[in-house]
Length: 171
Image 1 (cartoon, one colour):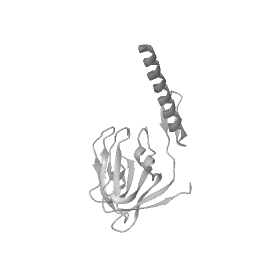
Image 2: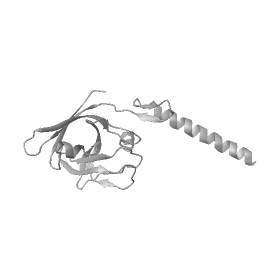
Image 3: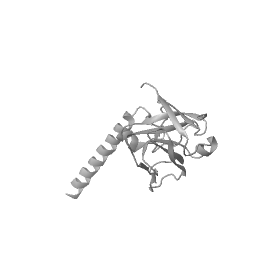
Image 4: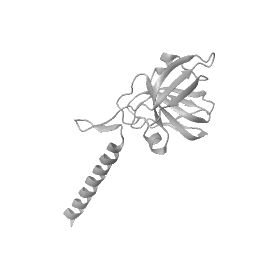
């Protein structure tokens, strides 16, 4: 009886692992490396420019990957080992409201920029700590969140009050 129970539990575990591997590898940007680890590569879906609040000058331009549905927003940059230097992820929400993010399963330290419906950067959290479960939230309602490598905002002198504009590629 005990061995039958262990056999059933083992079978369920194998099916669960196989299903997870199947669904993870169905994403076009996910692959399994030679060592068996998952590697999620950057998938450019558009560009985003940061504009100065003072004179509308372009501070920098990045390539973006877009998280515009619940599944993509939930995964975000989790499990990634790197992000190109001039790249980031744009999260697009259905409603402008207080947004909160955490870094669970995120290995890359990030700068998080919360942006309102007028495309104004309203909150910046710099150098967020990888693999932490505490909440990084916007101080006011946000419609977008941009994640870039930690230190990017300081390097490009991007501050609260600056704006973003973005253009999405046709997928």
